[in-house]
Image (cartoon, rainbow, N blue to C red; front, side, top):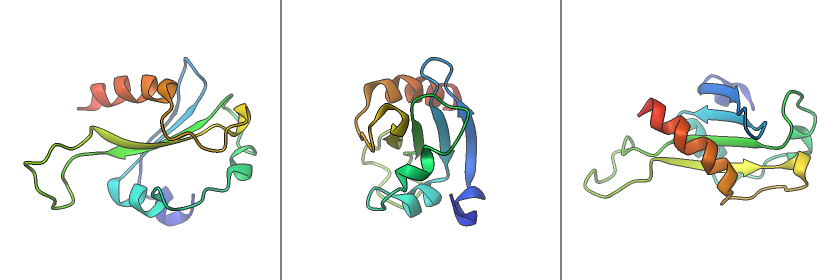
Length: 107
């Protein structure tokens, strides 16, 4: 991540069950990375200390001034599994098995 994103990391850790890196970003930083930005997946393969993938996420609360009466997801996420041969999988159940308990503990 570039410096503007690195300054906005809330949590950085390794999931013990799957060996994924979990990167919890501020909402603003996640929006900078966003769903429309390409991630250099080859660069992720150079990172040591994980065995499968990288999960980036942020809180889903209505902190952006949107209508607070509208339901929001608990979190937003992206999953990259370069060491498993998956560039990106936006709906990875195993990543959500990490994210749900994580966000349950910080809610």
